[in-house]
Length: 199
Image (cartoon, rainbow, N blue to C red; front, side, top):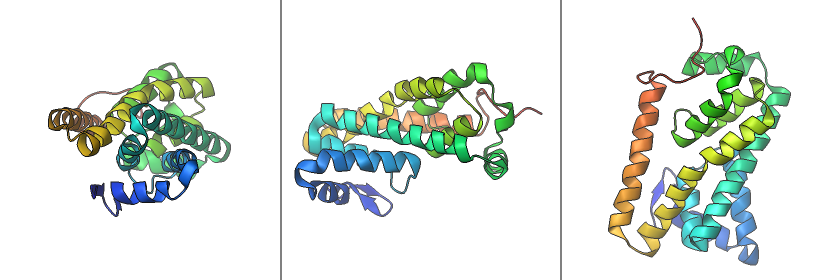
């Protein structure tokens, strides 16, 4: 179980979460909340570890609900403390002017960005917060948009490490790569997306 990205592996996450004993699900939930607000370790590693530890149903619920709560906390913090520095950083790095964020397209824009990794999750949360996107629009678009990746990453841990199901693993990896490829091309502007900074 040494699969991993960077300095964090699935085995490390599993060992750490298991150290909490009967509180392991709560520990995993807390890690998802932290990861959504401050991604110091990859979401795919954490979700795969939870799928292996808790099975698909509980693993999916923890990865989905924890990430959603973390996103909401980051959104509220950004809305409360957002400023010009964050706006300029987003504009210079990704070419999006938060001041021109289209409120009417906010729901679908966030939903698409959650499903297809156009931007890192924290950027979506910050943009929505300082762009004054209504909370419930942010909440429901994020709740729906996080389902596909939670399903894929949780299923990856089960198919790859528990069941050793090569066919399912290849299919899941292909879907993940497709999402990553699409997100890469969207971020380069090869496919038009909403909320691009206006000229």
